[in-house]
Image (cartoon, rainbow, N blue to C red; front, side, top):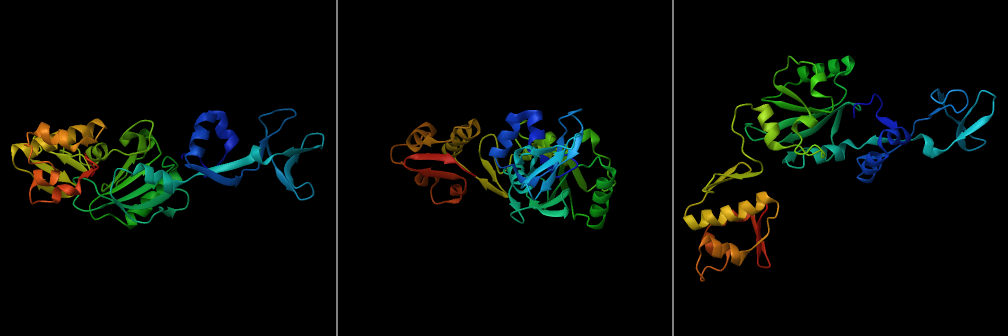
Length: 297
């Protein structure tokens, strides 16, 4: 993401890590992007770059070595790839409710993208979300500063970047929060951003709820998206505590009968609908099927 050119040779990336390159290509985060027709000369100095040219006669790329001999270069040697920023940003924002185009809109070609808006706990309205790369380049930084000055956000704007945090210049546009991806990732090995970590960066000192769902200690209150649901009765709250404990553990699916029994319901209450009575708002985050039940925000 921080490379000068938006396209890179696959063979060059293989020299850094073939396994990582293969994994990114398999995940479609890297996609084919024509050729970068530059190769290392194979006669005197292997690190000397040569431009590979197309020979219509031979129907291949190649170059002339120091003796004038034509050296054929295979497509595989100079095949290039680029990052699919649409997919990369989708993976970054998987934990957020996002509104906007299906693919990010380039604001500055290959450098700055508009991904629409996200809902962030603590913000009064949906938050504009941009992605930018190479912000340590003075030219790129000047373009970003000019862009955000021309279009200030109503409240805040989040600009996520691949530029390491210590290399991001200081902006005078204080409504813009420029943050490195790795600093707010939910897992060092994944692209997904943590709503809690991002919220703490944007609103330091403000108590952040987990998004898209969280609850009070006794489950008397459940915060689902922008709604607050209140639950009364010891049995209902205990039932919710059981379901949420399974949800946070990563193994959310439980048997309905077992949950009702553990929550203290008698034999006449044999379904979640009977347990919750006439209200149905619980069905916005609790699913049930074939005798099983689980939290699904």
